[in-house]
Amino acid sequence: MFTGIIQDVGHTRHIKHEQQQSHMTFETNLDMSGWQLGDSVAVDGCCLTITDFPSKNTWSATLSLETLKLTTFSHAKIGKKVNMEPALCVGDALGGHIVTGHVDGLAQVKNITNIGEHKAFTFVAPQELARYIVKKGSVTLNGTSLTVNDVDECCFTVNLIPHTLSHTNLGQLQENDRVNIETDMFARYVERIMYFQNKSEETK
Image 1 (cartoon, one colour):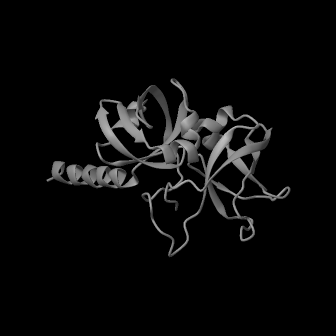
Image 2: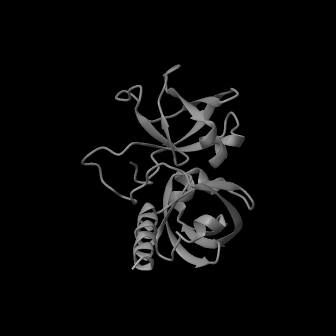
Image 3: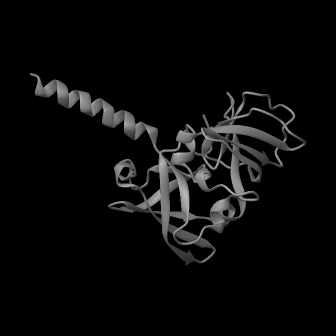
């Protein structure tokens, strides 16, 4: 589990594509002294498992075809800045919201509006995910926990404060760029429960 509070903006150091998977190495300024093989780190919101420590301040992970299909890693480039957050430990502050690191798909930047030092970003979500996004609810974009300001069909708007703009890679986004999106998992549980309740009513 993660909180959606980004702790470092690292970058992609090495990429090796294979037929059924890809291997990527990331560089970070985080203290890695306590990290171990098998630990989880969210990179742009995608939960990855540490498979190697190639050199100082770097770690590697293997990405499956499913991960590549659903995330921006399908177009990963060396040097690309990525948001990082190590897995939540018991007793850590939950500053954002509960994030699983299981990316649902991609959202696209529709427009960006400057509001003083803030910026309002409007995204277009895939239709199958839009029903899980509600006004004043939580959404995770590139691993960053954000509050939804407004919703209109498949479009939703979030407000990024200066700290978020400067401490994540979201500040570099331009129109038509794509980001990893994870919707609130509680909405999925509610939908599933209601589905079976409706099925039960139909059989009565």
